[in-house]
Structures are given as structure tokens and as C-alpha cells.
Image 1 (cartoon, helix red, strand yellow):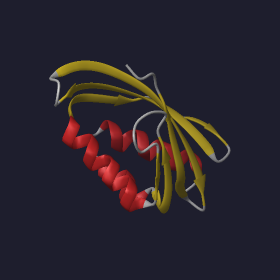
Image 2: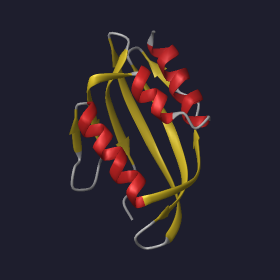
Image 3: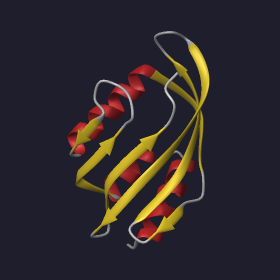
Image 4: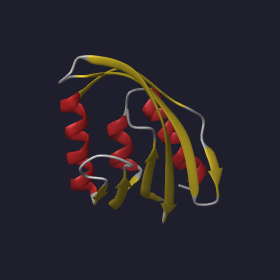
Length: 119
């Protein structure tokens, strides 16, 4: 798959509740995932990314999500992820928006980096 096809699949699968399929089919086993805040800002490799996902599910109830159409530039693409979530420990519900920037090499996503403001 080329970058546009990968980007289109990520958007379609995120918007249809198939996020796990993205990790199975679009991501490199050597993925690097970067967050701007938190204890583990850099996750390297699929096992570390899976652990990050487990933390998210333990701490947030997701009511809805929407991923924007991708903007593609050569081996990179970006999307906006909008989420309506409740932070389980505090019970605080909020709307979140983040930019995801993805790098593609050899037909797989090899890097993702998220940009958002911490509250």
C-alpha cells in the first residue's frame, strides 16, 4: 500500500470502530509512538504501543470519536482525531482534539506523533 491508501484505511477503520485493525494491518512491528505529555512519552515497538493502548482503555471511557480526512505529503500524513471521553478515575467528561502525524516506510506506519494541549 502507498501512503494515501494507508491514510485512507486508517481514517475509515478509526471511524468505523476498527482501530485494532489499524495496528494489525497498517503498523510496522517497530513502530515508534510519541506523545507530548505523560510518563511514557515514547513507546518503541508494537508491545509498548499495545501497553499504551491498555493504559488508555483503563483510564478513559470513549463515548465517540471522529477522524478527519487525511492530508498526505509524500511518506507522511496527518489527521485530526476528535474524541468525547470520560476520565474514569475522576469521572470528568471532556471533548479532546489532537493532531496525529504519521510516517510511512515500506508500506507500513513506522512513526506516529500526537499533538494536543494538556489540561
